[in-house]
Image 1 (cartoon, rainbow, N blue to C red):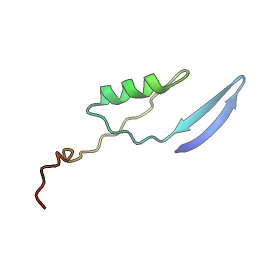
Image 2: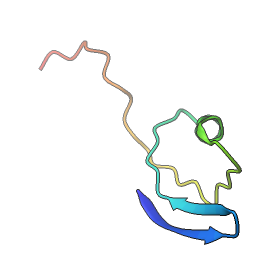
Image 3: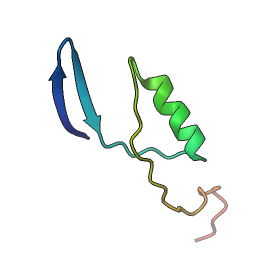
Length: 60
């Protein structure tokens, strides 16, 4: 979700809200940095507890 963007001389600064599922904050940071095509600044990283992924063995 693009929160807003601004033009700063010859570059465009885009502020995004991203929902990303990762095993750790380090993994989330690595994924975002690899996806960036320019300078990336992560201003906050919120964690949310989630139940483990389904293994397909559920009997209900």
